[in-house]
Image (tube, rainbow, N blue to C red; front, side):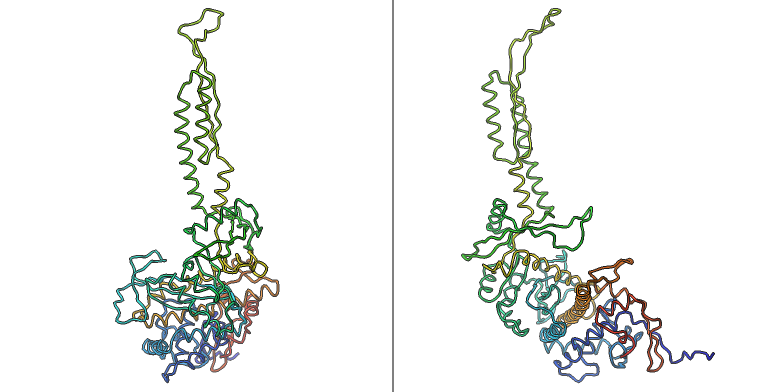
Length: 553
């Protein structure tokens, strides 16, 4: 047996990164950016962004020192060309980011999102909008920045740090199609209005006319200006803030009428002893806001808001304490006339009628005896009789039950009036609950090890880094979407955590299945160090990727 020549052999750990490369190729990442950014630099802007995306999704943080990152990688396999790692130096990356900023980050991401929607047939008719704050360390006293890094309302609960805001528009629950960075003290209400002003033009680029999509936002959307801006232009779905009197009024109407539409559970999980699945029911009504009528869907959830119920508990305890004080005073009083005792009892009952408890008052006849011991065999002589009250306090279910029912309610607001057939309450609730997808996206974008990297010392590069993270998020979500569509279409499961099967695979779950994948390279020949296991091939099928991605540049 001839000894193996290892001088020309290299072994690299590829993990899941060739899959990321395959998806970047599907959305034409490198060529799209190179086509839009006019430059003749040694490292093209498209390749610079792709390198940063690979680094972001590799699980390695923070996002810098890409030269070191690619020194241990097969660049020809991952990048499609034998690019020297030295090209990914900070100087080249910085120049590329500056040129990308000059071209326009929104312009670039919009085109990439359009590529993704077309290739993956993503339905763009359900839009979700939200914002988050990103805290940063340092003074950031910049001259004429594209947006102000300053103090503002911190959603990270770090008011001591300066911040900027990231706003995002997603479709199909969590696929980002628009993302912007803006002033750290900007208002969500203002950002909603700015987007509504331009949304028709933006969605027209995706082939949708006004009325063909529904805009979903949180309660900050509800202002007079935003409602006016949406009129005749955009269908919207949001949550009506409890600060509006119409919110309480329509909830009371729903509880009083008791004409609920049973929706049942929305979650696919089963009940657990300590975590029961929420069951929903809805009531279709209307509210008047700023002189106009809107459709209001009152939603009752069995998973009541604990804070609201604690507030009700405090209210009931206060009411009971008041009644106990009144009862103590009334029961300590002796009445010498039965009619006086009854009158006092009726007065006490009337006084309790305004609260949340019901009193049961009885009159007890109490004999009073004279001094001394009676003669043997004779009863104690009764001098007189007194009458005292006894009171029992119980919650009034007819008053407390509606209060608790109202506490479990919230109101969805929409301008989809008289469209119950096309947009029934269960579908609108499901659409609004999908807003959690965009909220999960923000946790991806707020990795402090990335946000506080050296690239964030210029506001212009903060915006470009935001583009890199958005592209990374887009690819991350597209991979997850492909796997879940595969599971649904084939009515099957994929290997999940701890040797369990799952119907909801995640991209992070997938990445853990390929941590051991290594590729041996001898000259131009590549092969896997070990054949892929069956569960790894199963994931490749779900992703629509062949095993060749690990060996063919």
